Image (cartoon, rainbow, N blue to C red; front, side, top):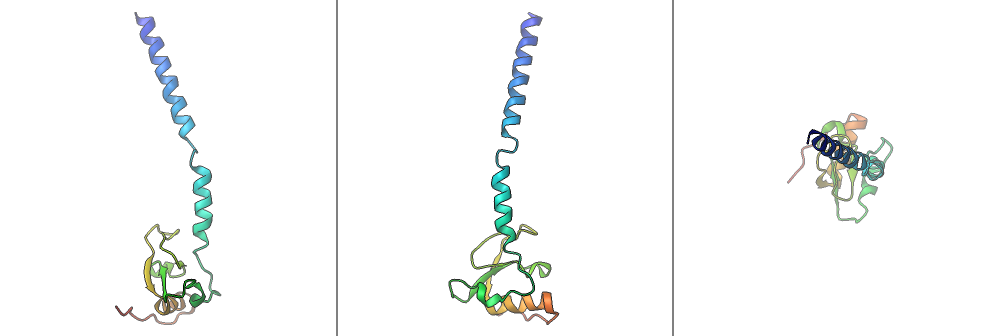
Length: 112
C-alpha cells in the first residue's frame, strides 16, 4: 500500500515538473519581439515630432511622464520604459513636451 502511494506521488511529481518545464519560456521569443518593437517608440533628440503623425490627424500618443516625453507613437500603446498607457495628445503639444525634455525649453500646459 505504501509502495503504491509512493509510486503515485512520484508520477504526480514528474507530471507537475514536466508541465512547469514545458510552460517555461513558451512566450519568451514573443516577448523579445514585442520589446524590440516597443523600444522603437523611444525617440532620440534628433527626431522631428511632427513627422511622427503618420495619419496626419494632428494627434499622437505620448507617455505623460516628463522623463519619458521621448516615447511617442501615432498609435495607442504602452510606454516600454514605465509600462503606462500612452496618452493621446495634440502633436504640437507633444513637440513642446519633447523639446522640454531634450532642449530645456519650458513646456506649456496642454489645452483641452
